[in-house]
Length: 360
Image (cartoon, rainbow, N blue to C red; front, side, top):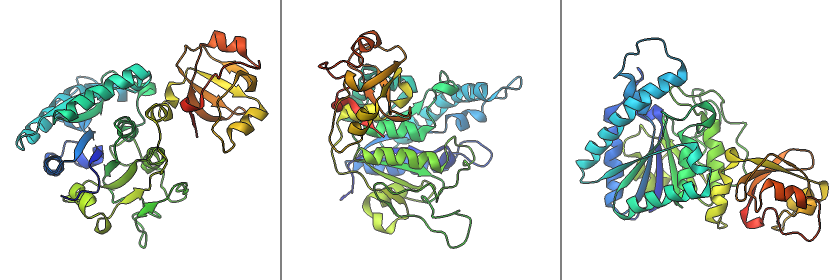
């Protein structure tokens, strides 16, 4: 088969897998498994990022008392995750394909070591013909440590695994140039690098998911900037995945055009690490201007006015401009005590080398 991509991450949203009553849509799940199996047998490497644990558990448990939203999520996902992965296991087994479960948390991306451990685990699975099925471990993730939703998680996974494309399956055909319910609106087929979409996107969220279209486009833009094609399409359409890979011109979807420059694996990790920043480097006016220039430059102690927070060598820190606005993130080359000693001095080694610097 002449597939357009041979390494893809596919994110299946909760609105694709959930019926109106909040329970799991097994018929749709089965149809998507058939499609992934077809691609897998055609030589496409697939990592599946699947929502649906909460929906899967909702019909199994009747809580003894009124639960708050975090408790509900923990209870339903603990029961539902087992049921969900079991169902995937059985459905893929009918095609002679083995799957493996990867449960992760946002903190697992916070250190380079944990990040590489996850990557190695999934690489071994793919090398052995096993399809990784990834989900957030909702039982131990509480609000402030959660991914925005599985869109954010799928962006991190696509980036981490050096995928050619990330396909986000939602319950609409893509990003519309207005409200989808109004007559005359249509799907934006291509989003070029640097195009502003905020005027087009409604901010309300879809039914059962945590992430609306605004989240999807923010993630999509970041991932496309790393050289990965991002596609937003309707997971409820029959045969959507093979159609996107074999007949993209005839298949309705929104495609984010990827950047052409190569981005290193470390930079990809740093780009998704803003939430793990342990401190801040505040630049002076001159350093801010130099950093914003066309040349790749490192951050030297002479250009830093002030340091906020306590951090260890190799932690992620936020880079702030002279006005105190965040302009990027980087991996720090020394701990906070040593960095403070070097502050404002000439002739020192970089605090953040440009290879480990990601600017917004």
